[in-house]
Every structure is written in structure tokens, then in C-alpha cells.
Length: 323
Image (cartoon, rainbow, N blue to C red; front, side):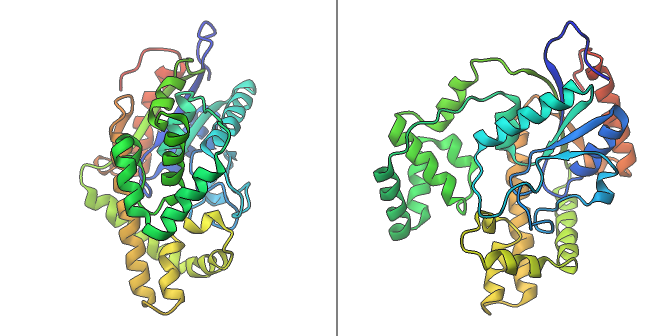
């Protein structure tokens, strides 16, 4: 089912929200109803060998629905937002050309917004001396002074980053000192060209955060049963692995060196995952375009899916839909 011919923009459904909120199940339900295919928007599901920590949907969970941009990179490879946008745009174009509906599913807000808002990225020549200076400061001073510095020059970008995300903190400062403008400013300017997509964004939220936090705690327990510790040990043994910074692996490092018990490490992982979910809720909560679906207001996933399908039907017909 496609948009009316007079509308040249590609119709895209996006399912966004925090970890453990049920995005995968809803995305699959929409694809099965509307003959769609999933384009993942998860910055960790792109890596191979991280099925458990990244909560990569199993073949059973996918229910025969094609999923794109999952597990195609080695954990040692780097992957930028710009590269994601290029790859995801190619997937969307291909899915649409085959008469199917692209359904973007994921919780990495930067990926989602950069892709759907058609952000153009400036690839300036890297100033190696500046990068070396910032890296040396990180080693000598720690991340906090650099994060505080970023909060002064680009508070919006700083608010999007966790203190553990040293790579992006350094990149944001490097971009500012090299280009004379912040990444936030550049992103605003880059939106001058209109997006090629007509998008319906469905966001999974909760009225009571305790409901989501309970789901996160139970998911971590299930991950441990499924072999999370063995997966994390294997990934952390490779110091080159960019993916070793994934939530679900780095929190277990202290257990492997004998500093804490397994239970303490898993409790810490639950805490960090809850904090990550809170940041995701804040990110998506700022976007007024998102139609909110509160998962704790529905008795089961099928009733939630029925509500989402009711929102998607007029959208895919090209009709105005305000949720």
C-alpha cells in the first residue's frame, strides 16, 4: 500500500522509543500488515557477534519480515552517522522501488533524526594535531572537563551524550574548534534541503516508568540466561572493538577482573540500561511530530498494534493524520 501518486515523497513509518519498549514486535506487526520491511536504526545492532547485548531480534521474532542494516559490520569497524544515513537511504529507496513499505525501527535518536530529516554532513579535513591535543587532554584530565567544555560551547549536543561516549564528545569539540560552529548549528543549516520522506513517527512511551524499568530488569536477567557473559567476555578481549563500549558489555568488565560479583555486575547493567532508557525518552519526548503510544495503556501487544495500524492506514493512503 503506497502513498498517492501525486505525492513524490516516499512514505516511511518510524517506530521509535526506549530500549525494551516493544519496538521490534510493533515494527514486525506493521510490516506484516502493510507488506513492509524493517530498516534498523540501532547503533549497536549493526555489529556482528553482539546478538545478546544489542537485543538483535531472532528469526522467530522477525516472523519472516526482512530486516536491513543488522549485523553487517565487524566489531572493530567504525561507523558514522553519515554512513548510516547513506546506507539507510539506499535501503529505503530499494524497498519503496519494490512496492513495499519502509519501516524504520530503533532507539538511536541521532540515527533516526539524521535520516528522516535528511541531514547533510560536512566532511571537513581532519586536523590531526587538534585531535591529538584533545585525546591527550582526555587521558590526562578525564572526560568530565571536556564534557563541561562541550556544555559551554554546544549545550544541545552535550545534553545528547553520555559521559561514557568519549568518542562523540571529542568529535563534537573537534568539530567546533575546526569549523567555528557547533555540530548542532551545522545540523540546522544542513536541513535546508527538504527530506525526500513523508514520515509517520510512532513513539512508544510509558505513563509509569516503573513499567518500563521492570521490563528492562527482566530483559537483562534473560540476557544473562542466554549467554550474555560469554558474549561480553569474547568482545571485551579484543581491545580494537568499537562495539566493546556497548551497554551490556562494558558494565561486566569489573566482574571479569574480580572486582564485583556477577550479581553486582548485572545490577549495575540494569541501572545503566534504565538510565539509557531515560535519555531515550527525553530525546524522543522533545519531538512534537511523534505520535505517542503509551505501552502501559494496552493490555497486550496486539491491541497496541491495532492502534498503530489504525494510524498507519490513512497515512499510507496519503490522508492527513494527526494521531
